[in-house]
Length: 89
Ligand SMILES: [Zn+2]
Image (cartoon, rainbow, N blue to C red; front, top):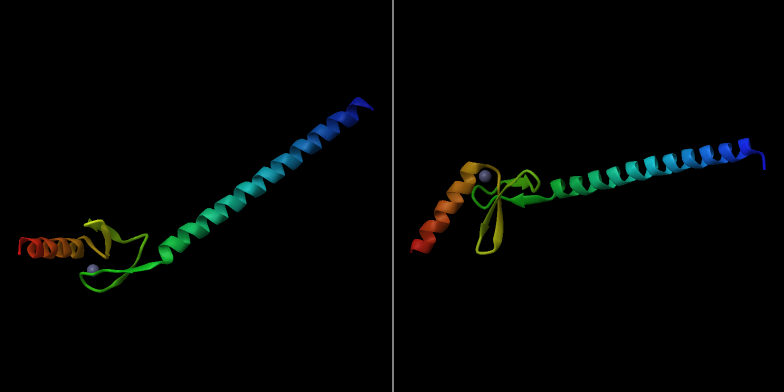
C-alpha cells in the first residue's frame, strides 16, 4: 500500500470519529434539554394560595418527609407558620 493512502485513511477515520462524537454530543444535549423541560413542565400546587407553579421554579419545603411546593417565599412562610400553629395545638 502507498504510504499516502494510509495517511488519507487515518485522516478520514479521524474526521468520521469527530463527526460521530459531535453528533453524539448534540443528541445528548438535546435529550438533557428535553428532560429538563419535562421537569419544568410538571405543575405543582401551592398549598398556601392554591396557585399552580412549574416544579422547576417552585420553592420547596419538607414537612414530615412530605415535600411541598410554593410560588413565593411569602406563601412558604405562611404555610410553615400554619404548620407550627397546628403542632403547637
Ligand atoms: Zn402562593
